[in-house]
Length: 78
Image (tube, rainbow, N blue to C red; front, side):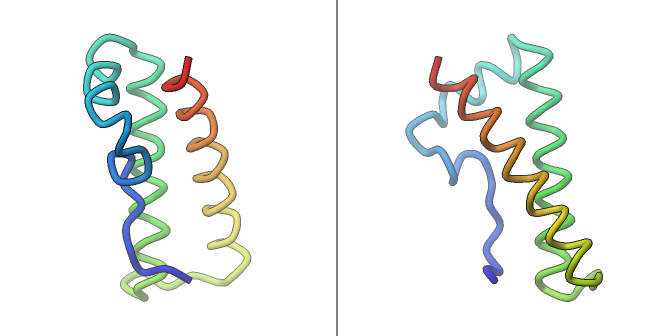
């Protein structure tokens, strides 16, 4: 378990500039980025016990965050 936030610019430092550009130019990417950010916050708050939840619920959030991260990476790398 990691207590470090997984912000997109930290996950993909090689795409830091492109992330900002795509948030402005691509509504679909911006929506995915917002969803990722919200899920990431929920996971982080659960991990740090600010808003504890059962293990299964936390695992489901992590899986969804990973799915979004994969989709975001696909868009960034094309």
